Amino acid sequence: MSVKHRTKLIFVLTVIGVVALPVFVIVIPSQQPFGLPLDVDYLTEGPYAGNFMVTDNIGKILIVNETLDVLWESDVPERFVHEAEMMPNGNIMVADTAPGRVIELNISDPDDIVWEWDPANPDHINWTELAITAGWNQRALDYVQNPSGDWAHTNDAEWVNGTKLGRTYDSLMLSLRNFDLILEVNYSDTREVIWWYGEPRNHQILNHQHNPDIRDNGNIIICDSENRRILEVNYTTKEVVWRFRLDFPFGELRWARDCDDIGNGIFMITDSNNGRVFFVDRDEGRIIQEFGGWYLAQPYEADYIEIDGKKWILVGDSPSTAITLIDPESDLFTVYGFPGIPNYLRLFVGLFSFYYLFMFSSAFLSFKEIKLLERFKKREVYRELTLLVLSILILIFVGSLYRYLVEFGLWEIMDNAIHAWAVSG
Amino acid sequence: MYHINKSSEGLIAVQKDTRISPPLARFDLDFVIYWSKLLMGLLFGFSSYMIMRVSDLTFFLMVPLLVIAALLITFLIVRYYDRKYNVGLPQKKIIKRSLMYTGTYFLAFVTIATLAFYWGA
Image (tube, rainbow over all chains, first blue to last red; front, side, top):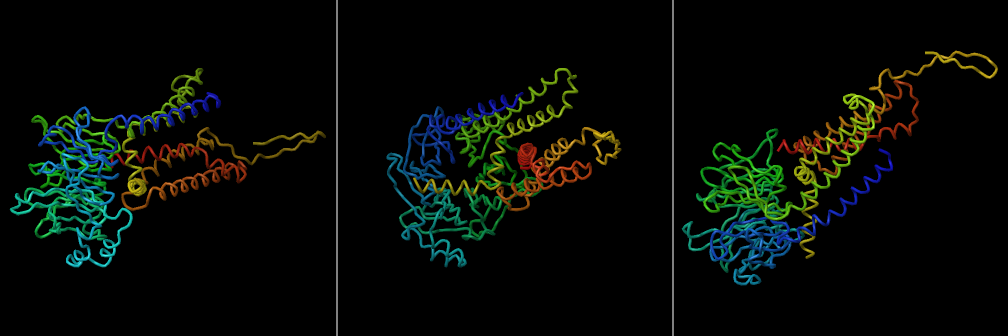
């Protein structure tokens, strides 16, 4: 192949790659109601039972059916919102991450905020008083008293049924990621702090945690994401009663952001940057079943749900711009929405592979006079063949390529960029 | 090997050729650079994953550092080749040759790092 033809081919492939970018990342995803789904819940009660509630990181809470028709929508949460949960009273509790607040939205009026807890509001919480009571050090005190940037990063609000715990009041378990702190606040007008775990900037206890859950026995399961472990903490003594981590060289948890107790001594962990969801036998501390890998990009949270008597794993996977429903028995899955970003990456690397396929073919055919096997010994041929094989391997593992880049340093840049975008909105 | 040089006056000079020609095609410089870059890409790609597992070095420092290391090693290989076979490459050409197949290095690096990341979860 002449240099002229090679240049033409590169030009054509570049044009396809450039034109396809806005089509895959902007135009096609805009045809669906959500952009970057983080938390996805399957509703089992109330007027919207049998539908999905989606927390769209773009700044929306939606209830959609299986054909992605919007049944309910609220634009009140700001960009960067992480979590929403249906309350027993039918309203929706939202962890509105950019401002750090927690808001209860009225199901009858999506624009109406019924209840709010704001970490920056001195009427809602007195950080100095809490720091003194908790015995935090000066560094922690300095952090909580000086709001700046992505200050609280409230990423979870879990409703706690007080009646079940023999209390006269209900509460909310909140996760303030950038405080390295879990707070339980009274779900009332008093909003007093009932319980806390962690200390700001003390990464020995927690390091940018996600999704605390209360088990039936009262213990709290926490994804201690950046310490690469899952903890189970005794509510009364605050002692760690169970710890799960994977040790080098036998793998490692990478930014695990959800852990649910699904019964029978099994915990379901969402291991985001490994692009997988897996079951762990709690007593043995061993992975017993694993899902995802190639078809999940960076799952945020997974729920073990039941639809018509059958168990499913429901996953919110924001880089895929889609909801994934996995059958735990067969590992087959259904995708709701268009996985724009992974599909664009596949196309992009596919164009690379096409280029090397073309180069290899033309080099191979240019030695017509030589025996077939002898052609592979020619430098021009084996060079192109090597590059073709390498590019096809990248194409196959393109999902982990994305996570590799994120893990290798893009994470902080992306996080800061997203927060800046959230605040600018 | 001897070269016979005939001058215009008909004088004959016999000069011993001190250059050592590579005996086989696989010692061709182009061949050596290609395989060096490919193997270094694979090795450094896997190392990048291992480095990440044991340190907090970021992508933005590690990747350029490994590229510089690969280029430096190639430079030394080319220089060694140049001296061994008395090719007489000028410094500029040695540098230019060291940059050859850097694309192959990157492709090998990304492929093996991605595979290591996938299987080393």
